[in-house]
Image 1 (cartoon, rainbow, N blue to C red):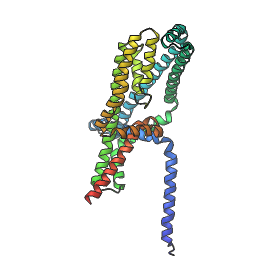
Image 2 (image 1 turned 30 degrees about the horizontal axis):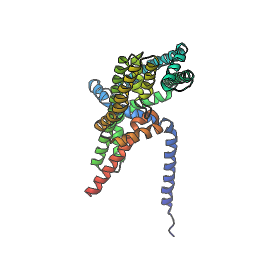
Image 3 (image 1 turned 60 degrees about the vertical axis):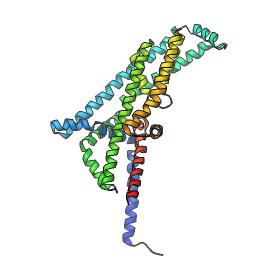
Length: 338
């Protein structure tokens, strides 16, 4: 039986210590993993803007800070105004329940369905529960913006360094990868293209669903169409639930107020355009076209990414699966060429 020599013991101990520090480092950064991923995505997407500003002023720190401030303003301030408007709207809905003629609506539903059910009680509970969801969501959004300072600060702090030192960091990572120069170039270019493509695809579907919802709510006379269209655009990124969580109650609202024809037309419009075409066909087409991702990979990545990383997982999930496919293709190319 061969015994380990002294220098082999040293290598073994070094390996154990190295693995211990890897584990310890992971435990330290684990609570901020979503922040790190968000910072990387934002830095890659905003890098062309940073490069354009740096080309003019020739100062890395100032260019990176300026881009961070612009993104922070574009995300935080509209988010706070939107959350505040959503909270007020939800409170108005909650308070207006008492003024609705629910017994009359209940009697109408009994005539249509032929069921002797106390619809007014169920309607009251449903409307209040529905408004409570938005009250809780908007207050949580405001609370997150107010108390989630550490995560917000971490994301934009790291984004600053990724913008400023991104090229140097990429060079260091490239040197450490056990790949050929061609494979490294393919991998890094593919990663950048995937992130930009996924981001642009999601941005495009959000804008498209916002405009379609705004038009629909305006045509069918839904109060505050701009606010509800913004909510639809947000719900467009939530799998399974989607825009139907907004337009179905809107159809019920029209139906209860005696606008049966408008309610039916709204269901047809939103059901066909938003929930069927945009949520399924157009989303898959946009992501497949912009990021060159198969729809199956996109859907699996979205569901898995959301469960692991939260809202950031919408982009990170499909990205990880797509990078796995890219690495597998590089592996096959290497074996075929060899």
